[in-house]
Length: 293
Image 1 (cartoon, rainbow, N blue to C red):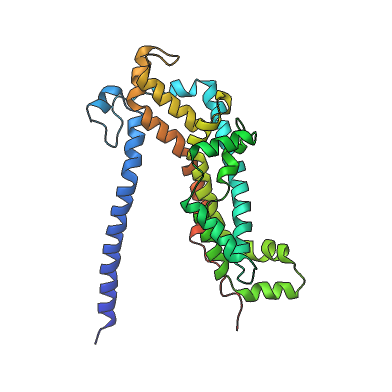
Image 2 (cartoon, helix red, strand yellow):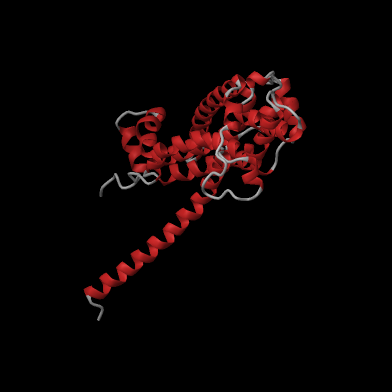
C-alpha cells in the first residue's frame, strides 16, 4: 500500500524534474535572443572572430546610430504601426464574422462556404495575376495592397470556427429567447466568451503583418510608404552590396557586420512589448460550463 509520505516524495521528485526540464526549455528558447542582442551591440571584428556569445564584445552603437539618425526609418516605422493596426482590425472583424457564420450547422450553403475557404489554402492565382489584380483595382501604392489580400487567414478562420462550435448552444438560445438578435448574441454573448481565441488571433495577425515585407516591396515604389521591414531589407542590401549608405565607408563596414542582428532586434522589440499584455488571455479559462443543470 502506498503511503502519503511516499506520494509526497514522489511528487517532489516530479516537481524537481519538471522544473529542471522547464528551465532547460527556457534556456534553449532565450539563448538565441540574447545572442542576437549581444551581436547587435558588438564590433565587426568580434563578430567575425566568433567571440560574441551572450555578452557584447567591442561595445558600439554605430549601426543603431546610422538607422536612428535617418528620418526615413521613423517614417517607415510609423507606416508599419499604421499598417499593422489597420490590417489586424480588419482581419479580426472579417475572420470573426466568417467563422461565426460557418459555425452554424443549420446554415444553408455552409459546406460550399467552407469549401471556398479551404480551396484557397491549396490554390492561388499566382504572383503575376495577383499583381495585375492589385494594379487594376487601383490599390498599388496604398495601404489596401497590404491589408485586403491577407484579410483572412484560412487557418485562423478554421481555428475560430472550431472554437465557436465548442461554445454551449444553450447560451445563444437563452439570449434569443430574451430578445437578442444574431448581432446582439455575437456581440454580448459569444465575443465576451472568446477573449482567449481573439487575443491569440490578434497576436497571430499582428505578428504576420508586422513582419510582412514582400507585398510592400512588390506593390509600393515610394520610399515614404514602405514599412520598416522593407527599410531594413534595403539597409542590409545596401550595407552588404555597396560602398556607401549615406555614411562613411568605415561605418558602413561596421553596419554590415551586425546589421542583421540590429534588424532582428528592431523588428521583434514591439512584439515583445505587446506580448505580455496578450499572453494572459492564453491561459484564461472560457466559460464553457455556464449553463448549470
